[in-house]
Image 1 (cartoon, rainbow, N blue to C red):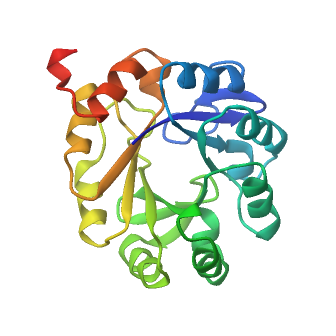
Image 2: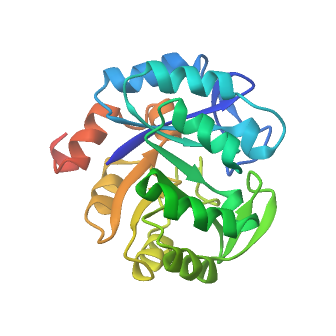
Length: 241
């Protein structure tokens, strides 16, 4: 499963480097970006409200509009921390929501929604070393392994694992981190951060436990085309493309 990313900041599609505010490259209208990925054959979209994730604003109207209009499976992330924001995301038509900060700061609520909504809930594990990051990666969020154990016990079905150091760097995924997470859970794992080449996608495709990958910067700057990336995700040899 390949999920092209549309990250929204101040109403624009952007890509950050290691999640650092001010490092962004801007790519214009987020709906146009989403439509481009759909036209190239993507079935899923990873849609992020960065302002909500950082706690400095909201692009909820834009994300709701895109989710309702785009005709793709949408995994929505950013600022979903209570019943109201979760209901808004699901009512807009999101197939899945990615819970990050709330999984760390409000574990009881997180366990309740996992029980209530099942595979409509993914848990975002944003990792710096062996520690987790919260609030748009600006705060310490606890130990990775302890958090996985707790969420496994709660019945979590899917983790979105981001290596903060790799995100936006075009240096390749953190395969060791992904293998570590996969070894500790039977839940599906979606890789995020650093996906740069078709060979990266092929290696992720062949990893036990990795269900999919989020691709952002590499698509926006032309390191690969989404058409080729989707072909590799479905089994093609990168060297044949």
